[in-house]
Every structure is written in structure tokens, then in C-alpha cells.
Amino acid sequence: MNSHRPAAPIALTVVIIAAQLMFLGMNGSQASNSLEALSEEQLAFANRFSAFLDRMDALYFGRIEELNGGLDSVTKTMSSEYSDYDIKVARGAVIEKGGRTLNITKKPTRSFQRDNLWSRYYLLDVHPESPLVGMLHAAIVIQFFPDDTATIGGFLDVLETANREEDLAYMKQAMDRVYEKYGVDPAPYRKLSREGHDEDDPMSTDNSRRRKTTKVGGSFYLAPLMSVTEKNFSFMTEAYETMLEAYLTVVERRMNDPYTDQDLAAQDAMRKNWLEDRFFSDPFTTSVTPYEAWSLYSLPPEVKF
Image (cartoon, rainbow, N blue to C red; front, side):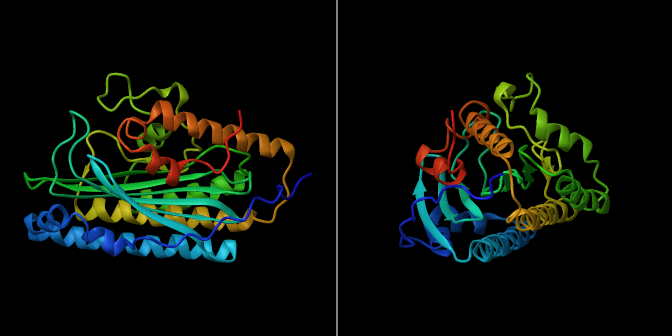
């Protein structure tokens, strides 16, 4: 029975090259002028969403620092034709790799998308050292459009590994309470999390190598996306925070538990499945986002073939 991997090489400390607030001020005409174009109600939601993201960043990296006994992290900003990226990645003994990206969309990448006035896409991909806890994929996106409409969506789920049933039940029950509080049926969102879109859907992808989720959370990319109302905004932000906190609680619960070679094999399969999902299933990864960006914040620390 194994309780530890061979020690990894000590990562070099990298100087932080940009802070999030500085990044949000980059490409200023696009970001600032778009805010000015929002209605009073939209502006209020945009400000609340920005505050929410600040809180999630503090929660996420604060817990990683506690679990890892320090915060060894690197930040990077980059731009493509379609988006600006603010990326931060932390590495350590308990959370082997914890990635975050904050994207600002500059123009649509698909025919079914629209130009927007203001948008934020926030994503966490978490790869714990323990094979008893699957990786977390947690995304949330908000968009405001020139016709005074707005949408909110996202993805919250844990991938299959040598998960412990009591841990999955704990996270599922935490999410169930949020679903019930807002009167939302979890069934279609959990189905979409595992199965993906139908072939005749415009957002359909190659599902043969799709991520294998535990369906404790849900995919909130069900078409049409939720409009930005008080109920939907509160539901999505509370669901996001609930899933993140429940997941990190499970990571802490299992961080010192022993595991077997069979458990490690399950983790290896999960990490390979995630790599395949990135390359073959998700249309916004390899075809839109620069490899230098998505590989940094999303890929596992190790993949075996």
C-alpha cells in the first residue's frame, strides 16, 4: 500500500508578472467602455459578479496555501484574437496543481455566439495528489449583450477516480440543498454534465472521449442559457461557492489517507481521460484558446500512456 509518490523536483519560484486588477485594466477601451454601456441593472450585476470572483480567488488560493503549507504559484497574462487571459497556477504536495483563469471575451468564436458588451469567464481546474479525490472542473460565465439581455452559465463537477462513496454523497447533498433552495431540478444539469449535448445541438462535440464525471454537480450550459435574474444569479454563484467549499473539504479529509496501486491506476485513467477531453471533446480548448494558456491552467501535472 502506498501513501506517497516519489518526491517531485522542487519548482522554481516565479515572480508574479501581473495582478488581476492590473489585468482588468488592460485593453482598457474594450473593458472600461463596455462597462459604461451597461444599463444600471446590468452594471449592478457586473459589479456583484466581480466581487464574487474576488471572493472565490481568495477562498481558493487561501485554502491551497493552507493545505500545501505555503503558496508556490505563478501568474501569467496573455491575449488572443478572441480573449484576454489572466492565469494563476499553484503547485504543492496536497494540491499538486491548482489552476485558475479569468477570461475577458473580445469577440465571438462560433456562429451561435453573439457580440457582448461585458463578459467574464472564471475557471478552476484542481488536481489533488490523492487518487481518492477526483479533479474538480468549476467554471462560471456571465455575458451582457447590446439588446439588454444577459446570460449566466457554467460547469461544476468532479471527475471519476478512486472516489469514496461517502465523499460523493457529501458533495452531492451539499449541491442538492442549493438546487432545492432555488427550486431547480438537478436532473437535466447532471445528465448534461456526464453525457454532453445531443448531436443535433449547435454546441455538440465529440462525446466519445468526453470527461467522465461523478454527476454530483451539474453542467449549466443547457441551451438556452439561463438569463441573468436575481434568482439565477444567486443560484449560480451559491452553487459555485458550495461546490468549491465541499470539494476542498473532501481534499482535506483524504489528504493523509493511504491508497493502493489500484487507486493510482484509477487516477491515471482519469487524468488521461481529461487530456483526451481537452483535445477531442471541448470545442473551446484547442480550437480557440491558445495552447500556452489552456495547458497551463487546465492540464494534469502528469499523464501516463
